[in-house]
Image (tube, rainbow, N blue to C red; front, top):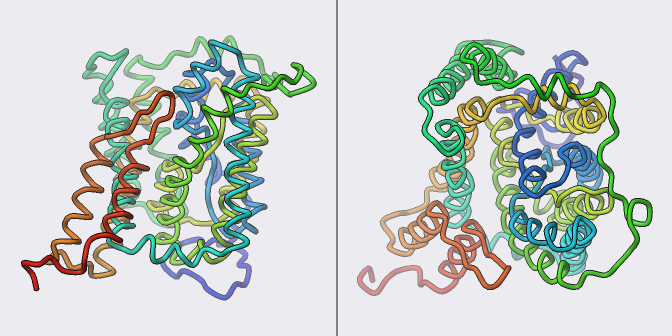
Length: 428
């Protein structure tokens, strides 16, 4: 099935572990599966902001390859466009245009780089005490379930109005994907997500909700809409953009660490130690710096792709690297990009029901595997606060700076873990 590269540890639960290389034909299909999964969200960010989707696709592919290089090809992660910066980028685009957005993206990436250098110097041993299972499990559950509303809206809403036809397509996509995953064997079971998307797309075509006009109008070959500093525009300092976007990096770092925790659980490794948290942060930050230089939005790791890893048990970094290469190639092929972009939201929503739920389930598994004792009030309180703040969408807004629900829930969980005693007075 695959050529196996020797490493000290191999996760026997994985069909393809991190260093396993699939056969060429399998590699192509598995990589395209990841591309299809992340495509909708990655191109949605630039569409919301007013950036050409082709450059977001290009920068996500290049950023993922850079991340894989920085982490010594030890972490199977895909980086796509970050939603955390959307509101700020919209304001900057209307006020100053992309040069300000690009400068903000670069500054946010540099914050990651600076923090990674600090951790490289002083170590990351503090992570285990900062994030015990009683905090990590609920945070991972939040990462999955906080996206549940997005999945539901994609499945139900047509221009903000409930559409039964949309919902039927979403449910069909969900059910057929589950059936593929449960009853197919061998390679076919590994591409159940891709097969589900294809079948869902065919169902959407039959239902008449696919618009092929953009595909027909698209050119076969077209350069991504690069906006390179000193080439497409002159340098000008935008202090407001830096002040607005750089602090958000501290928020996305908590989400970054949450995604790494999910990957730790899936792959049965500790990426905080090997290749090290400093490398994961450096790779993520450098990806955003590159995106800012070429004309794209800041990047971040993607829950959709982590969901694919969880469901298919294909953790090969070769597959994620292949998806990144295809993203770069397809950014130059207008027809292919337009075809993937024509996948309607109910198809993505139907798949997301399963993928986001798989992430949340892995958080629950951490609590079970570590036998977290919920007879203790402190554990109940920590979990309760994290879940309600995170899933409820609670956020802290100060001016243009926003602390997202995931970041806020993480902070509350960490603080509660340090402040609360092992037992309440009534339990002593």
